[in-house]
Image (cartoon, rainbow, N blue to C red; front, side, top):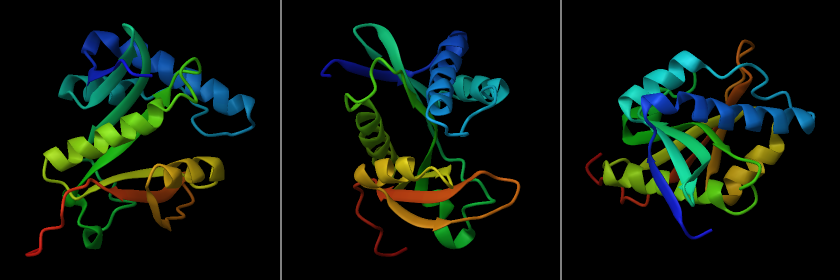
Length: 173
């Protein structure tokens, strides 16, 4: 995997993003994992595409992955003590089954960490499904640390991870 192009998705690529997310949902279901077993949040994805924070990754001109990276720190998870403004956040990352296992996800996360650093952010953060231990191991293998699990009865997500963007911490902060 050498020719990976990552660029902001366009509003007319909403269907492409949804297809990638549905593919991930089907794969999770086939493994007995109930994560993402609902239609993609079309309205949220459309807004992210309009804002330029939903990205697509292409190999040889074909879309193989999507990732949303923005400054939205879910207030049910990230507290003022976490300095939520000092981070970028990953949402809705999915890799096509055809590209799975080739390192695309890790490359997207490295790219997102670089994006965070370029914006002066100290951390790249995400929240993951609380009981998907395989996903937790994946993120830990990609350099993330599990900070804590927020257990809210109305939320299935809540395992909070972060990794350094590579930016040195501000000593005056």
